[in-house]
Amino acid sequence: IEAAGALDDQRDRVLTGAEDLSADLTNNSDLRSLDFQRELLRRQLRVSNAGRWPTVAAFFNATYTGNDLDMSRLGNFTGGGSQEAAPGSGSKFWWQHPVSAGLRVSIPLFSGLTKMYQSRQLKNQIAQLDMQRDYTEQQLDVQMRSAINDLLTARETMYAQELTVQQAAKAYDIADTRYRAGAGTILELNTSQVNMVQAQLSYSQAIYDYLTAKAEYDRIAGRER
Image 1 (cartoon, one colour):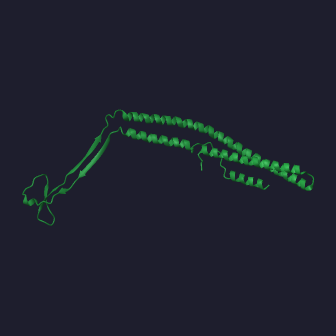
Image 2: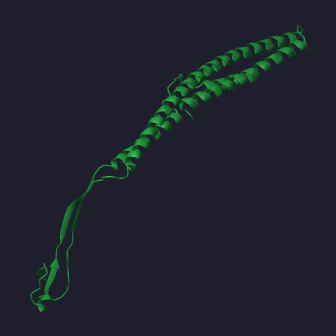
Image 3: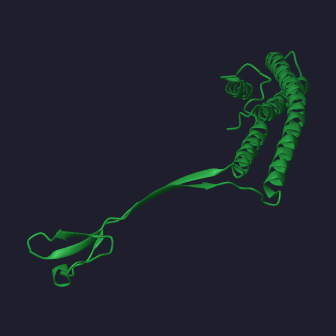
């Protein structure tokens, strides 16, 4: 009787928080992995195509240079600079202020068809990956339906074995009562006890089958813990 009660508690823990069965494959790990690979190839294709476009770069440069020579002793100094008075002194110094700015345009004219072949190869890989994903999704859809059927079958079997355990326990109680009253035999009592133990073992196996089917369903649905 105590063993039957323990099996009932185990069944309750198994079925606690059971969710409605769904054939949604959105969270399947295999499909998500293929989607990530496809996105990576798409980004590589964008980078490869960008290498065939013209590029424009802007640049700007400004400097402020001078020297500490006393230019007043050298007379007039020519060289494209300007003479300015140094702060705190009567000397003349020569300073330069060059500034440069511009745009640089790079236009790829010919790269040996390398870029074109690389883009074509990436497109072929994306197409092959799409075909692989469709094929994988079809396989997973069949597996999902099979897993749901197995799970429902295992659940019904577990319920049936639960009723069998209850009936075997009642039969054992009746045989025990008859034996204690002197109306039954020890053989009848032992037989009912063996039947109850066998029913409990079958019930435990049914719970194990249900857990196995539930684990397979969670794996396909992407609900791994």
